[in-house]
Amino acid sequence: MSQNKEVKQAEKPGFFARAKAFIVALPGRISGAFKNMVSELKKVAWPSKKDLINYSIVVIGFLVVLAIIVGLLDTGSSFLVKKLIEL
Image 1 (cartoon, rainbow, N blue to C red):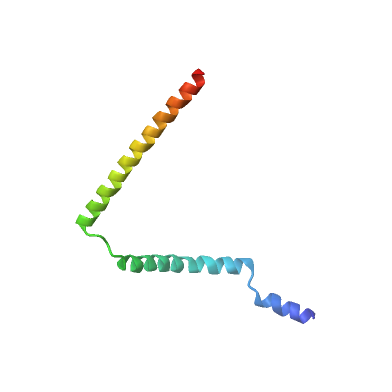
Image 2 (tube, rainbow, N blue to C red):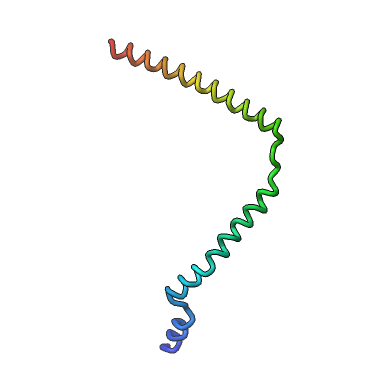
């Protein structure tokens, strides 16, 4: 039984060995991640300039409408709170 324990301990690398292996493999893992990112970005269907301008106009218009709605709600709610305080 003590031989099995010794064999298992001998097979498992220590903390420093694992840390060294991690540090040695780190640059390769980082460069692999960037290579995967570049290959995925090449697959992206980028919009044309005209489409990008149209999408931007739609988003800006939507934001303006929402800002007006939120402003009106804020003004209305502050008016109601002032009237309730005056009671």
